[in-house]
Length: 158
Image (cartoon, rainbow, N blue to C red; front, side):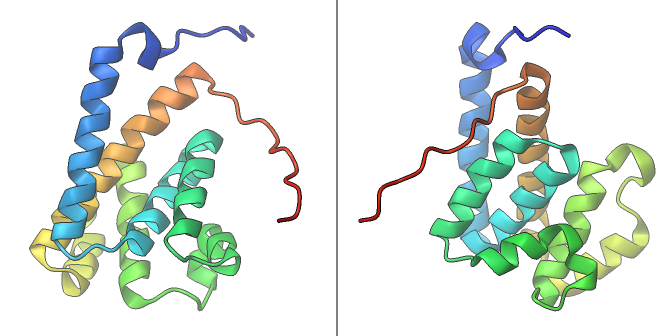
């Protein structure tokens, strides 16, 4: 197994910059359409977990903490169906995240579409859908490139 991989963001920075700009646009669309940082980061973490992208999980857990999400909620994301810590909106968003991440299996089923549509406006649905598209693209780049996730160094108490 080769440890050295083509680093797509370095080898073709123009393409990566376009994807990064796309992701920033999606962040603005989420904000403009009522998707707060808490909900967006829960979706980003879950898609990244489902894809097995430890690099993106770390980035979005850090962002989730900055958005005020507590450790208990973050650790409940993989088991959200069995957990009572998520709101109706968060549960619908997690369903949508799974449908987009595993789009090749069943697409977005009528059941999921109807459920999500009963909870979110059309603009919110679109914003969340684009967020899923964005993070799934980043997950694929990072996984293919085997971006490292090293242990964090211990920080001295403040």
